[in-house]
Image (cartoon, helix red, strand yellow):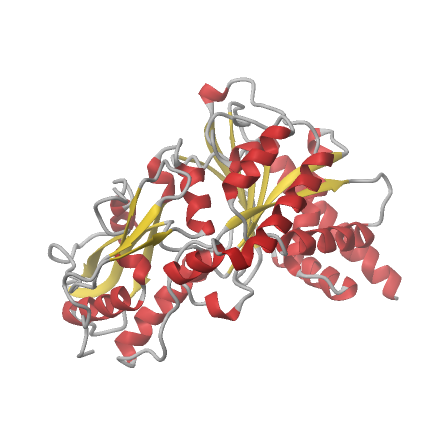
Length: 431
């Protein structure tokens, strides 16, 4: 790992921020800053030394500009990213003899000052005097579900092989392209798409007591339900996310007594190979208006949702401030529940995020339907996160002034009922 830190000490770069970074900043500007903290636990290979860990982290910091970026003018229409030269990474303090999850959670209890400090912090955790884990916390502006997995893989590669091939793309290059005159047509196309969405969107429904919003969650996943999702996807030649999203939309609409809902879907904007390995948040929300028709076969419904989702994905890269302007023209202003004022996120009641294998090694299969409370209020009123693993695990979080778990458990049970029935319907047709 020699030859590091080749930049000169006074070499500082300035650039606009990317659309993904802007969306993240708008989403967190009026909520608890701890909601943007992403604590992790990375298991270390046997016999790893603290020096090897620091050398690997130093390589990552040089490779990925997002790990050495500060931000200015965060409240303006066009905040600035300031990329500093790489410096040796030093893990402060001696290794802790504690539970690794506790160490990571402790790192996540302090907010980041994006104007003055790097967007990551870490500590080593030992057991019986031997280094076993790296507890690390990253700010969401530096990474998303896709790239945090990539960062962990690169870290382990550096510890085992000592080198990484090729160079990583930079946020400033992406930002330059996104704001360029050459991309004006694409930006206008995204505006037109959102215009059409809000032309037909159901009216915005607000929480009756936004000052009392709190978070609760339910988690569920079974092999039977996972198998059903896969069988439906194969039979109708649509994606796993589309199948689960369709079941969620139908279950949420049925439970809440609606014929039509507007759902916010996260897109990671990594279809372009140039930006696939970019370390930052590229997540943005795309809107989807879904209407449920009585008696419509699930396969036909899911296929319709799949192609509507595909059309929205094509416009997933957008200037979030443009979308706020369009929404306001249609009466969507302020926030649904008081947590996302000034952000596109605040306009939605229903959220969906298919997270793939994010934190797969830290995910345990639920034993039945588990529930709990959370201090990390992300503001989304009803938010389904789906993670891949041995089984598809669905976590449904409700952030509202309501109490109890009736809605959470009711929707999760409906999702299962819908999927199992749809799989049976599909199998019967094939037979």
